[in-house]
Image 1 (cartoon, rainbow, N blue to C red):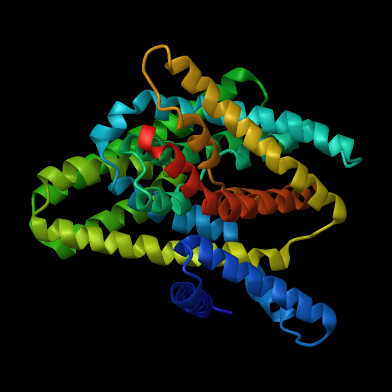
Image 2: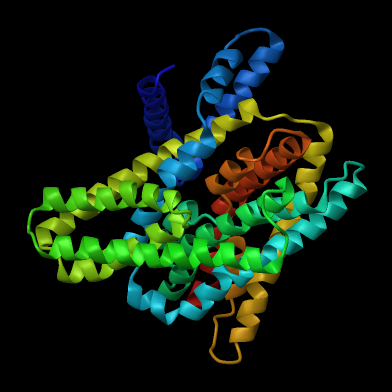
Length: 413
């Protein structure tokens, strides 16, 4: 199946599922799309098992023809992160810089090691021991949070601006940090990366700090170009080039593309929006990137729901996944609670900050994509299945209940 046919099927399914959700189910769009796709997948599995409709094989062939990791990490992610950063107020983010910075860096590291150590114990207890380094790899890929599903809900329930900024900022930056930690640990697991502190620190500096500096340069060059003209078609095209060309160049230079896109998006969305764009350009730019964001999110969550068709499910994998759901939540609680506890000596936090940040830290497509990038083998099958179950729980259960938690604390936040 060629690329055009694949895109056509995905967009058609996304449009159909979006209509069904808007017309009948009326859940938040991303959550509704994933649930409908998941139910369709489970229905195909059930019908195939009963021998009634033999569509599962065709669906599997279609999905195996899509490299989910490549599609997200080298395609969708750059657009989604840039679009998300474009609408983050830099002044608000600056006020929350210490919280966001600690959660996106120290929080990811704490979560990685807590999940890794506890999952190592869980797998051993179930009689399916997994090497500790692969448990740490799992901890790294499950630690980044996904703001896509929860942000729309937070806005509809009137979440405090400071809380929304914390969740958005952390999610945008911890994606890049989480990917770097994942690459380091996977390199150690596969023998391509030395386990010595100096090479690890060097790689982290190159990827993370190098990506941030590259994004700053890229955003500044785009800002100068945007300021020198007043033509919204060309200006939208410039931002598109920043995302596509900039992400590709960052990958070639072995810099963190996700971090580069966040930094470039913040600069263009704030300084560029204020000093380099007319009202007409701002309107067209916002509409363009909002549309890109919606379409790609729809396709992404449909893909997540359909991926269940190509997973390897064993009884032990499912038991491990169910046991690790609370483990991941506990690690999230600790990785959020410790930085906030430390910062509470210097500033005040609302009573609901820790529980909302904990429950609002949804896992999403990035975790699934990183799990799919693991080398073929038993470790990949286990980690992929467990990751998928945790992501589905996170999006469905946490995503649908976070609004009630926000309403409970919002009056005091």
